[in-house]
Length: 386
Image 1: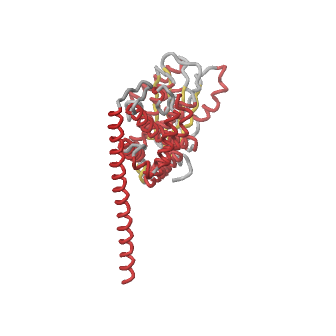
Image 2: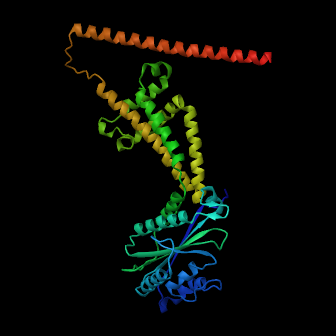
Image 3: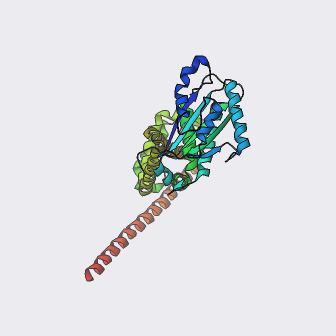
């Protein structure tokens, strides 16, 4: 793919004709009155002639129709004419595409162009614009143009009732329009599902079934246990605050993130590396699509934050459950000597069983290591005999 952004949106607006504003129409008149266009007037409805020039355009389409017949085109002209007479502003948007990017996302294949997808992307983006700008009485039309190196779509919009005086739209609206175009033309469901599956189906599933304070972690991964206990001691008294994004957890989030990093390094080193590589691929795609490193960086930050938030909440959930099951000793504890002896024997038996399981686990690990070494030695002997 090239270094040119996949999608670019340029926007401007024209005020309705008025003598006192005549100079503001200079650029607009020059634009639509070029020799290669059919439009010879400064009227809004004749801007359609430029958009629908058969030599360069696929023809006008609207929110509901892919093609307009002669009667429908005339009706649309009448709507634009009356809108101008009523004082409506004419908004002009141009959605331009890099050819290599269109090829990458499957809209373009050699000389074939999937116009249906381009029209749908235009419809979705324009509908979003109308909603965000609260243009309750808007009418728009558009046409796909092929007369330049980059395929582009012209969109013209007017308000038929209660026209506003200001034509400037919020910059965020244009950004959202671009995002809507990218989202419509690209299906990244499979790629994003890989990222979500790592968090949901691997890490969180493992965390739910493996307690941090387990006996095996105490022996094999004491650093995990140490970090866990350090956080647990600093938790606020109000358990309603024991959620990653709550204000009461603000000072503990860095420690939770550090524990998450240690947890991933311990149990998911290779899988986490693959996750980060897939994330790099997605970030590169979005940077190419939008031509903006900041937007791509925002996507990375969102996915990474999702990872830390979900695992952080899983850890805090474990702490809440642990706190519920912990015996609460009070000053008035009146356990009988016989009960205390039984409790001591119960703790001793649990410890013996735990040590036995750890021993079995370590023996299995040692047997695996010995078998692996024997296999490698056998391979070397076979290679030597050859």
